[in-house]
Image (cartoon, rainbow, N blue to C red; front, side, top):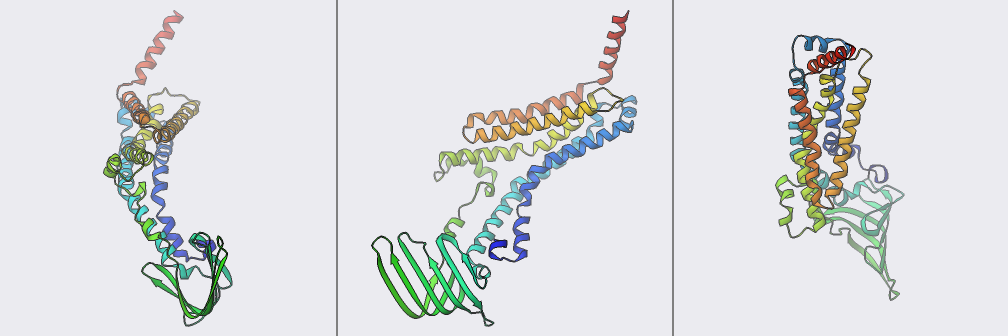
Length: 339
């Protein structure tokens, strides 16, 4: 719209800013994972975490900072997914509709053919200082088997209730039916053409992202939806419940390996690699299972398993796992074997 049709830059900024909540929803868990992993690895490199563990601080106590960050990011993600994204998507859809129906005069450039919706093409030779235009050519192929050509010396762009209109002055209208080869021509002093094509009716249809969670989970009660749309709505509703939890899960996955694993003076490269691979596997499974659930709701419980099982494992390790116990147990076993 901006590069081809010459819309102003402020519309580009506004429309792209309305897409930012989607990006936040995708990047937020990854950003939390990377930041937590970096901080705890730095604590190990500076021997601060080792000193804390030697002082008797448990892994769970050391992980409270990551837990707090994960909960905070999860709560903000709940807000983004259930209010930010629906509001932004609704505003974006309204803005696109306004651009297509009420800002068409901004799209017409001098000496260029401007394609509109449904096979309508407009050419304007010059914009006059009084707001009118001169040298107008319109090719309309919006109706099947009918081609209409309009040419006029002058005209004026008008915004009507149903969409943009052009008032033609001193011109010719030619129409040909490609099925019957019937040709009609009309010479006029004034003629008005309407470029509305039921776009306003499509504007009323809300997308999945615009609906609230109650509408999504109760999509089966909506008789206007197809079975595929019902599954899509239900899966989206469950995504809004689970997706925020991935912020907390990835925060725990980032610190659990460094907190419960044994200290290695050569670095934590293997542990970090396993943590990154685990995060990628969980993210990949979430994406794959979500796509499969859109085809069959029987897969839906697996989405919860993919999120809640790693979360429970991380909490269990942080709460009950004692690396010093296993270190001493391993040392005793080595000494026993040497004896």
